[in-house]
Every structure is written in C-alpha cells, then in structure tokens.
Image (cartoon, rainbow, N blue to C red; front, side):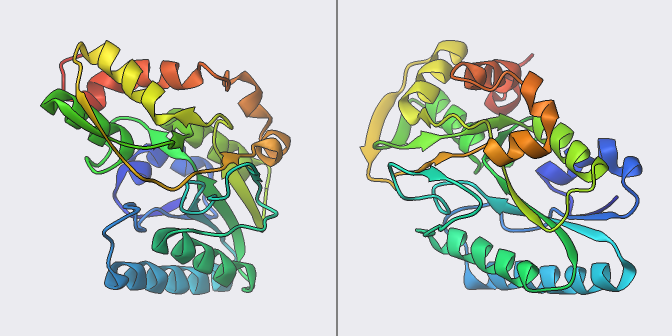
Length: 250
C-alpha cells in the first residue's frame, strides 16, 4: 500500500500497508471541517486528480476519505445512506462530495470511505475529541446545541479498511461509522467524568446531523459484527483513548 500523506490516519494505516501492494490511500486531504480556505481545497483536489490519473494508468485501487459528518449528512429525521440523496450543508461537505463525483465519473478503480469521527492517539488538536478535552481542562467547553456525533475507534477503521481491500470491494461509497449518533452533551459528560473536571458549558447553534447508516458496511465488512457497535460503544472508545487526547499521563 502506498500511503499519500503523513497525518493521523496515514500513521495508523502503516500497520496494514504491506498486505495491499496494489492500493494507494490518499490520506493527505483537508481534515478541518471549518476555517479552511479555497486554496486548501484546491490543493486537495489537485492531489486527487494527479493520484487518480496515476492509479488508473497503473491499475491500482485508490482509497479516498470523504466524510459522514453533519457537513455531508445534514437532514434531521433521515438516515444518511450512501445511495443518497445527500444535501451537504457546509463548504467542507460540498467539497468532499464534489471529489467523490470526480472519482465516480473516472475510470480509476476507487473505494470512497465516508468516515465518521475517528478517535485515536496522535490526533491533531483541532479534531473533535482533542478539542473537547482541551476545553474541559481549561474550564469552558463549547457545545453545539442539539449536535450529535458518531464516534469510531481508529483501530476499528484500520481493520475495516483491511477487510474491504482484502475482499476486493471496488467502485463503492461506504459509510465507516458505528451507526450510533451520540448527543454532544453525553460525550462531554463522559469526558468530564474521566478527566475529573467539570467545565462551564457554552452553547451555540449547529447543524443537525443525520444518523449514519451502516447497513452497507455490515454487508461488505463482516468484521464489524464483533466490534460491539451500539449505544455504549462511544464510552469504550473514550475510555481507551482519554489519556492520549487529554495530554495526561497513562
């Protein structure tokens, strides 16, 4: 596996790289859902175009990370499915959907993975869990009113990708998520309990996210059956990594 990028996901995918010599994983894209410039989006698009051309000419499979966040699935009351329709509510979501469309209309052998909120060690500080933990430790946490987040362990993400590539899944869009939308207040509650801190909560308006369907994921990656996805899964994920993103000793 050739991994394009050096960030959070790229580092974790190194463990399965040797098992997939004909795959190219594009893990160098935009990871911030806000405050991202058109130049950043343009750079990601240029890298995708170039990588897709090379993969098509060499007969390699290209893995592209899109999003299953509220930026993509933003219609409350519906379950977000890969078959759509989707109505991205942010520039980030519209950017990712546009790049998905580029691949769908190309000749490259692709696998598009719409990722939920991946949690694990060595995450950038701007991502959801490191950011919340830092705010709690500082004494004030910002919560988007009515927000829900689907959390998934990075180890489970790597295992899912390994299985999808091993079984030859191709030219598909797949949600990679737990399928459980957790209210943001419950995530903060659990972090406060584990950190032994109570923070002042300040609320602001937010996008209302859809729950994310994992029906297709379960069909294509049977390994998810023993990942214990369910209403308490997010607590196990937070417990596993809280010292990593809290900056506390393990």
